[in-house]
Image (tube, rainbow, N blue to C red; front, side):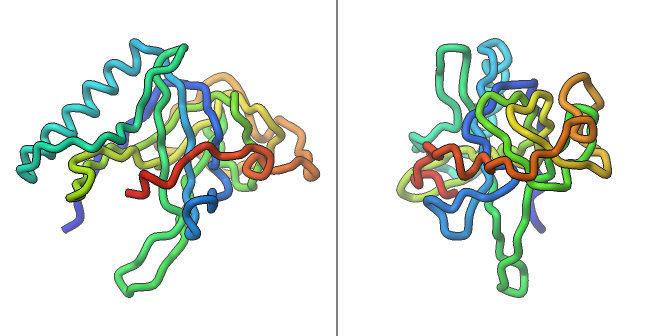
Length: 202
């Protein structure tokens, strides 16, 4: 039986280096989707408490005290920056790989069905799961798996939408159906250089 993880949703934060529509293959040939999200300190403190609780409980479960040095958050000037990511390909029960992609919505809860450029400075909420892990080398850690995102302010051009998300509520802000499409716009993943490293492929 597979473990069921709770899906959590952040408050609106400011994104850096978002790869939401096209996977980043710089350090992983199979690709991964990821985004760094800066959240205020008061909001982050609650998330840190939950992060540490998940980690400590898993340490007890596996009987390991060593903690991974790779926490998925770091202190920055405007609060804390959080790192969310998900694999672009996973292996199925039959042994073959299949592609997966996080679903992205606008502020009106419309599913964005076309690939659009999304730059640093965009504002969004992230739906994610805290998944603990253990490796003999690193110890116990927690990865933040990117499930979905709701873009409330887009620093870019946009595409179209067809359906709504069960995770987010409608709010004021960026609406993909009301913004003109620039078909010649460069994709954010091609214009922004990822600063991710390959040390956290867990």
